Length: 135
Image (tube, rainbow, N blue to C red; front, side):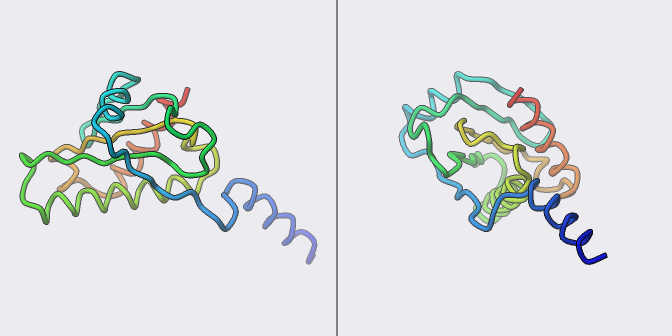
């Protein structure tokens, strides 16, 4: 009976990353942004996701991802809330092993609906987008 509990725990641990989860790193230079924006793209109601093969740090343990919100969306409070929400969703998806490919660089451009949208819907949409773009 005790052994079956350990087996179940072992199966759960295979799907998740070990204790050290990859950090989220942001792009800094406009040339890097331009290069990523030329890559694959997926548009949803809540955000647009762009990706390209990792050209800065090929074998990095961290995830290169940037979140962009335009001033048109609202004031700084609104924009920061949207960014925090998307970062939290990305961190949650990162815990699932293989959901996000660390060998790619991503840019997420937020849309106005993200502020009023439900967390669960955005989470599902982002999970589908990462799955589709990594194929």
